[in-house]
Length: 264
Image (cartoon, rainbow, N blue to C red; front, side, top):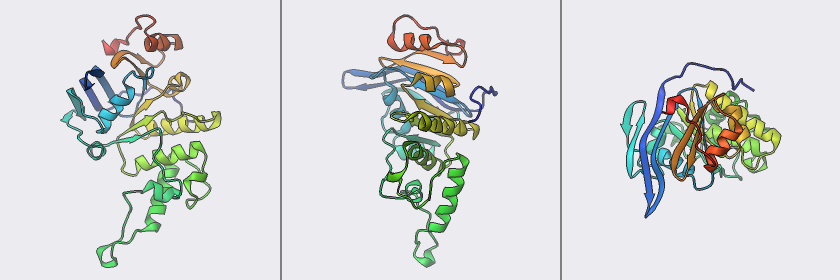
């Protein structure tokens, strides 16, 4: 597994949220949330159920639209009206349900909706050979191992399925990958595989935002941890600047948790 503790200079600022708020009727889902994601780092988003994590990811993914505040991608203000707009901005989200078609093989899942086709003179048939070649390259880049590219993904392990879902995100070569509970319901060895995938995404100089309830996983891979509570960002910690107790205190509101100097 790549070294999660390796410190590197902070790269390009890929994503910036400034004072983002979101309401559903009279319910405040997000309130004045600030967030930054840099190239080549892993940021973990943690909080209890109802803290606003999923809503925040949906705003970044173009599924929901903020009622106020600003989003910037590489310094430019953007309005991510749809998930396709977010993908065009270099943002790809892998949701907890993975959205895989169990009856299709790895190649078809990787290219679902973005198949490689031949020329007009041949009626634009799907180019299975080219897709298999690119699929091998993408799977190898994250060291995802499958028995055969022709095996239906329904027969793969949880870790392999997560790997396929993450690799599908890389087909469009995004600069940012958002992962929603990527280690949920996985065994120990499969969880290790997924954490390895996250660090490999970081080593490819992508920005990675991870929602997770598993604080051990968070401490293992995250360069920064952003804590949400009741729709607000209540704390931010850098690697080595916090303990598990600090995270739990911030998540539960047991006492005022310290913010990192950069978040002040």
